[in-house]
Image (cartoon, rainbow, N blue to C red; front, side, top):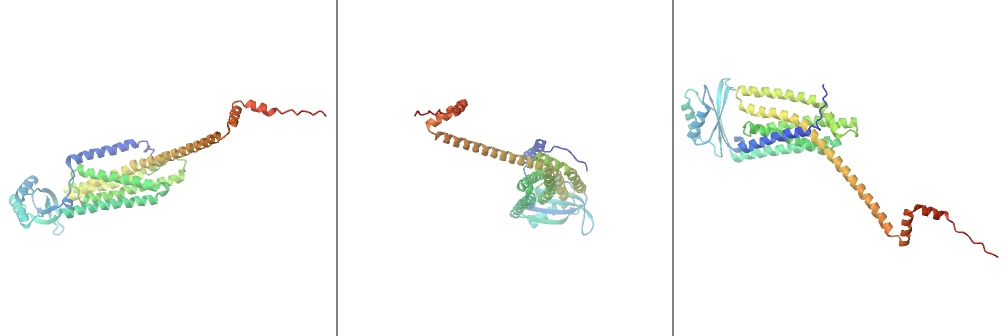
Length: 372
């Protein structure tokens, strides 16, 4: 495999700016268009009919809204093969948001209205169900709780597995990268005007596992290179080398997975299968952002944190040395202040004139002889 020599840590500001820029654009779109929730989350009714021939979506919407006095969203799936009769038919799905289910009379009115508009379409009921708003919101909250629990378990797993290279920090920044991926998937739903449904939760949980696997591969190489390169190697050099060594594998894995999901997306697009395309499109974006965040977000953040720890430790050591020196100086001053004044003057004089001390040491007192 080809070994790259890309300075990921040195280029971290470029990567961070790209991610922040996309998120800002997503937030602007979110403020302008708002977040749409599917009937599964906000409640309402869904009715699906099979038909033959062609129908016009705007005409169906206006006629149905006039008949039942409720807003409706119309979705058409063409050339759908029946599992029972193997017949190829078209399906039209009518979605009514709100806290009221469709009564039997409303369903009869719908079928009568559609049959009047298109007498040769042979409309037949395929599926009819209603979702209570309370149940829908409860389901949405449980999905969010499942995602949060997944984050916590992943953080604990990484902290335990990579404790030799700072497992808690490694786990934290892996979670930051995963949050980055979740945000990108969410903004894909906003950009494409796809209502948040159970596909959103499925994509998020899938991307969490995919992105984390890529991050763990890089962390594992960092742990191995720390043993091989020793503690003298800097964190930037260590992480850059590790990412470059695994870059080819990451790109090949992401490319193969992306190609598979793209094939599913285009097949769903060709047959107008919205349930497939609303899953495949965010999944494609999640694969790209999952690879990007593992390489360009988690690694540089880890280096920044470890360098910050080194700076804090150096500052603490410098502060401790300074405090020790100040303590010694204060002790010396206290000892100096306790000397008698005469001795203090003599010591000052000796320190100011060292030669005087030597001369005084050389002079010896003369002894006088007594006369007998």
